[in-house]
Image 1 (cartoon, rainbow, N blue to C red):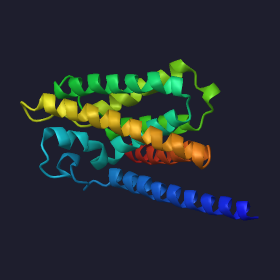
Image 2 (image 1 turned 60 degrees about the vertical axis):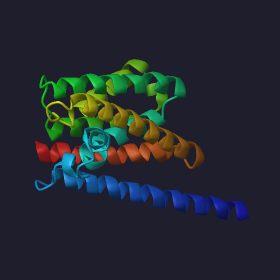
Image 3 (image 1 turned 120 degrees about the vertical axis):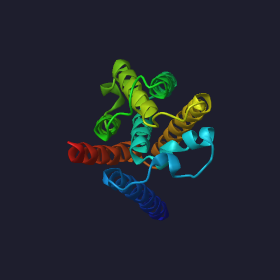
Image 4 (image 1 turned 135 degrees about the horizontal axis):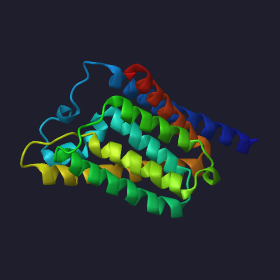
Length: 212
């Protein structure tokens, strides 16, 4: 009886935590759709190119949604898959950032990032045996490329600092989120990554629907 009560309390706490995350994601989706949303680069004030670009995902709800969806997807994969997937994500994010900073590619419209967030969120619900490594790595490459293109072009002469800050921010955030979701899935319930992925998919659907 005591054990059942403890499990019930743990379940209620986990539901509460997940509900708060859901509210944050939905709020982020609403911010994406508002035409008066502030420019993400100015959200933290004048922190300099390195720290400003490092914190950019925290001020860009759509970029954050892609990162959260990617981490939720990875949280349901084995460690051997994750070890190869995260470097691919970071590598493609780096290539995309260089391409964006040099003006080769422009920042994609919100519908593109929304579609990638939708894909990552839906993929998070798939069992691992339904996601072979080519699918995993293709999704990581796509998510990394979209994430790297999001910050846009920095001021002239600040490319290296901005690039290093972006790469550090991308890699640190996706790794930290993956570790958090994976640990929550082991300690609370294996549904944690799937639930978070479904919320990210919902945000992606909102963005795609209202951007069409």
